[in-house]
Image (cartoon, rainbow, N blue to C red; front, side, top):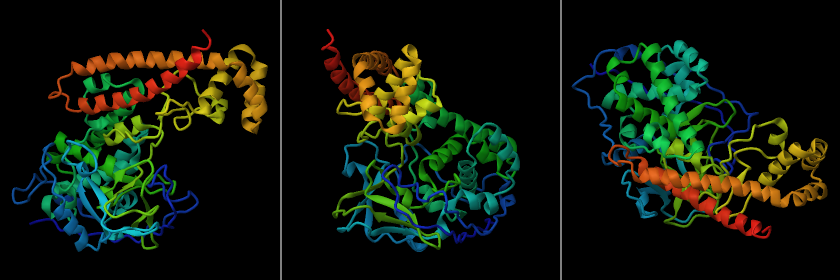
Length: 467
């Protein structure tokens, strides 16, 4: 007998606010709390047997062609309204060889503020309700992962989708799951050889994704006894499910760290300056709306965040954002302090731009460090000037150490480009069949190199004045 499943109605009280361009997923100020009532608990003991030959299970073969039409019909059956948008392969907008990638576009002219997608709360997958009512006992998993400092909300989604997968076509989420990409170029899917071909920071991000997957899988194997053994032991399925929850879930934005998956809403691609933002009404229904006027036929995208750190975006989501307006300057040898953080030491402020420009925070941090090596008392004066907005005092120190600052930037840029050249030579020798993500890694390295070369041109022009 097929196990019965019920869709869960969630009445989540969320106040709608406009998302910023930094991330269309950060929707709620921390002062707003989400009211989460009790929902239906699934009987997970029904699936402890081996897979059922009478049930159709999703084929997770990496290069299987996607079919999103059953998902669209499924969404419409459960009340999803998408009359203003449609979907097409992303290659219609960009030259891509990946036939698994789709994007959303406007089918009519849309003024700013127009709703383009409404998804009922009844089909949302959110980590809080999953933990409370929709899966079996997880206390041992929580203890295990807390010790490893791994986020629990993502894990709740992970075990929920493993459970839904184990139900095959008896799961109400079958058509949605079956519509998803099978291949991902995320850090989770990379090999040790791939990591060796990435710059240090990008490699760290990619390895972090891989380690998180391994830790989640260890938690499932050792602490979850209500999932069937056949699915827990299927490495390809488990990795695929992890990539799904990692790339298609959103932070709910209320400061709790809870995450949600919005079927069909997860079809929006990324742009740092998005045409669409996400909100929720008082019933917890998800509403996507335009952030500006959009012409018919135009692509509709949201922001996944990481606007100033495309390497982090690449490791998590598996694509290179070639439209990114800037990148972190990749210098990792500065030990953070309260003072350095206050004047700009962060991934979002220490930036290089495709134009070759350098963010002011890099100059200020380097000036602070130089003064610390030479004049501790003047370092304090400079620090106070930065905090108080004393541009005259701050500018005096910046001018005094102008060429020394540029010299340090040049040293970093030259070394990074030299190391990157060695990595590019290594990429050429990698067998693409053995390591299929290597071409995406090559694209990432080329993108970073272009920005650093633009910066180098400007820095060299300044340093030529010294000679």
